[in-house]
Every structure is written in structure tokens, then in C-alpha cells.
Image 1 (tube, rainbow over the protein chains, first blue to last red):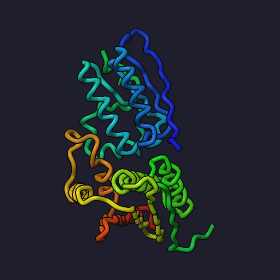
Image 2 (image 1 turned 30 degrees about the vertical axis):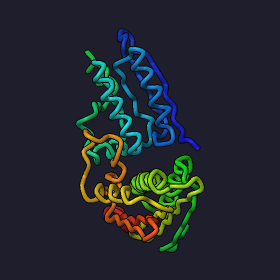
Image 3 (image 1 turned 120 degrees about the vertical axis):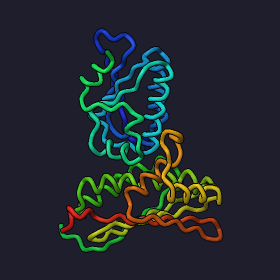
Image 4 (image 1 turned 45 degrees about the vertical axis):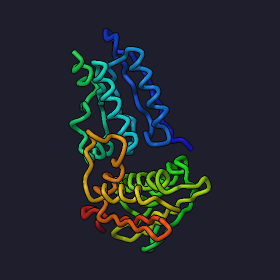
Length: 118
Length: 149
């Protein structure tokens, strides 16, 4: 049984190469391939700046974290960025434990992440 | 509901990643009904997830392999034992090196992160391998002082 995760996409007015993606549910080894394919498709379609809204992301394990690091690396290689906003305390703690807070662009609020694109 | 400590719950499941989400969520709920905090339950959910993933990925060499997870719940701690049905010496060496030495997420974003998380969230992690390469991982996680009864 695959863990439940839903990705909800939104455009941001005035930003042609940016996609806002809401992550809803749990990100783990059972659904990481599906999520990876969807995000990589966005990057390949020219949406090289992705803002990930983690407000409704309850859970991430190490496989999910590895994928987030991969998104960040791939976006940078395309001269873009993978920014994370609204992260919850539990998910942040896991990123912190593996020492990856400096490897990911993490913002408290969505507005801050959008503003950082300017 | 009055809980009488300690008690033990064990589950056997096929060596397939798809079985892990309901098991980790079950452990989390079990801990919360046993008066552990939601944060303790969440951290324990991560431990179960990571160590079961590891057992499936490295300890299931046949299609009908099974994993056994034993949870022993005490008033002040939880102990997990995960038994798989056979690892290789190479996998065990990798496991032990990660337990003993922290990994660098910048250099290695796909391997070793899970065990690093388990190591950081646990008081003790022991790995035992027998002469048939059957691996048993034992983890102790204590209740945080702040939530001691």
C-alpha cells in the first residue's frame, strides 16, 4: 500500500518559470518515485524555480529527504532553485539531524520564498 | 485506559516496502495510546520506517523473505528488534560503518541517511549477525525526561 501524497500545482502571477507545489500527506519510499517523476517533469518543462509548500506535509523519511536534495541539486544545475516553505517542526527536525538544513533553501513563510525569487 | 507495562507486540510482514507505512503508523498510534507524547511517537515512527526499509532493501534475498518487528513497550522506553532473513557481509559492513561514523549528506544523498537518523534518535543501536547471515537490529529509545510520569 503506497503512502498517500498529493501534489497540488499553482502558478504565481508574473513569474513564468515558477511553479508552486503543495505537498499533502507523507513522503516516503513507497511514493518517492512518483513524486520524483512529477517534479522532474516540471523542471524539464522549464519550471526551473519550484516553491514547495510543506504546510500539509506530515512526514518525510530519509528516502524522501534524499529526493528533496536531488531536486535542489537538479534545479541549481538548470540555473533555478527548489525552495521549501511552511515546513513543520517534525519534518524540519529530521532535515536538521542529517545536517542538510544548509543544503536546502528553507523559508518560514511562503511569501518569503516567493520574494527570494526577485 | 490503564496500560500495564511492559508489554510486547510483534508483527511479521513480507519483505516489500509497501507493507511499511501501515506498520510504522500502527507503532506511532500504539505509543500514543500508551501515553507517550506525539513527538516521541513521530520519532519512533521514523525509526521503524528507516530500519524496516533497511531490512527490506538489504536483508531480503528471496522473494518470499519476511521481516519480523518486535516492539517492547516499557514505561520509560521502547525497544525495537528487527529480524531479517539474511544479509551479506558487505551490507553488514556498510550498516556498521554508518552506525559508527556519521555520513555527509552533501556527498551521499541516497545511502546511509536512514541509519544516521536512527542513530541520532536512539540511545542504543546494536546489530547482530549470526553464522547464517541472519541479521537482528536492536534499538532502545528512552522517553524524554520532560514527559516522564
